[in-house]
Length: 284
Ligand code: AMP
Image (cartoon, rainbow, N blue to C red; front, top):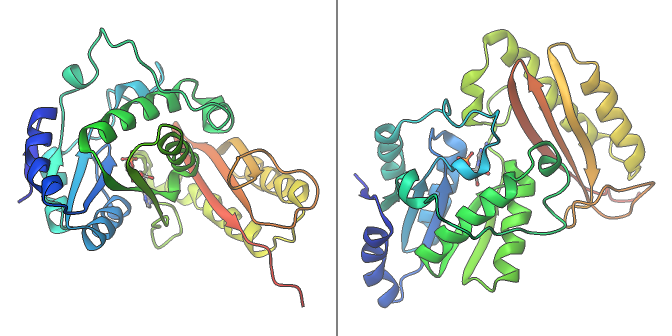
């Protein structure tokens, strides 16, 4: 079984001898309700690093007022058992009241990467993410931190935050883990009925088709994504964009380098996100 730290003092006390003796520390922040996607990050961290810490914290700051903070799935005991199997030595599971006290006055805001896409649909979301991840990085100290490409914009935001604040954290992006039907694993997939689940397949299918037919024409790829997902039964498209993979600025016209296609859509009341890299194909 992994040890559990419920507050910062316990986390720091557990880590201190490891930092002191120069062991490398892997860190995997999560909101719990763990699936094979989360566990792939934990396994990667455990294989790369001497010791691995995972956090489980349903971060109230990253949920909007009409979102699912209260009902977000929580199962700490099962999560801790899964993390132990994946090679995690310590689980940090702080209490929301003490980790986000009502009198806190500091917010971390990453400009230019947080206004578009998820940021446009979920105002304040990335401020909530960046503020809590900065606190976690400060508590864990020098480490390699593992994030999923599934949350592509989040990964870009965290990378930029760590760079701009000179945090002693190496941010490592890890590939999206998918179910057999192609749907990206997500804790929110548990909300889907069987019919909704079948309807949701159009999201990865359309992204795959976009990558397979990518010829550098960003405007055409964006239009095709929007047309297909906009007409898909049981799906309400929130956004579909083709962006620069670094700046997340929308790409126009025909581009030479890689691009990133990013999608958010509601299936029933469940909001799903996914993305795929569009690689330039070798010229014949
Ligand atoms: P969450 O618990 O949703 O905040 O996710 C915690 C971490 O797991 C984030 O870095 C996510 O990007 C990552 N993650 C979530 N789903 C997947 C997936 N299907 N494949 C890979 N990583 C994932």
